[in-house]
Image 1 (tube, rainbow, N blue to C red):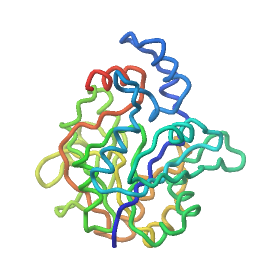
Image 2: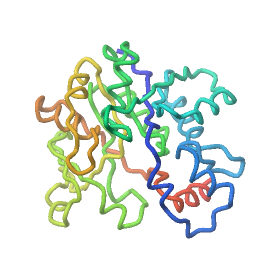
Image 3: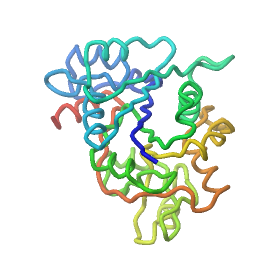
Image 4: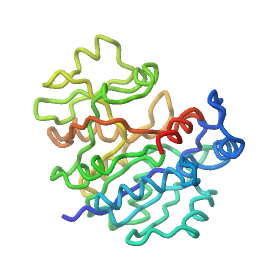
Length: 277
């Protein structure tokens, strides 16, 4: 089954970015962007091209053709961007993540993917990939996830290859994989003992950076039935992924990869990305 569809999650409210402070002397223009637009639209080079531009360039190079961009109900920024910027060879589709009754914000990443499949039913019977809009995944990682023969998979990043601060890396959940790299468990906020215990067969600690592949036939019901995280009060994609791995053993493959993944979580991250171009 051909896999050329990529769902990009961009409906978050960017609250951490807006609340953060810059210690690196961002320009007034970039500060304004950080406080007013979605993270994927913040300019990350001297010409003002946003992160989403570079993500799409890498995605197209990796063979993706159909992009499903999940945005909020009131979001116009992405629509305005794509009305002025055409990506020849890419079919850009917009998905609205509607806010559920009695909530003030979207219900999380699993809900975002679920609403995408409801609005574009063709994906229920297709293979597709999913990623964040505020991470700059490389061509190599995107190609690995698009071309894997596994029905459900994710890029399993080597923890020591990530160049974030030690404090930030400590906040990442770690993965427990079996000897064939299939997902067994996910540990949130791991202790040092957890890190030692959850190393893979090669002695490597691995983390998930939200770059997935799914088969809609298999995964749709797990998205539909995903429960709210008791702490964050959101339906999170890793929860649905863990549920399928527990119900169907050897069903979610972790694809080893050693590489940093630039992201935009705080205002200081803008400076780091800007300096890399």
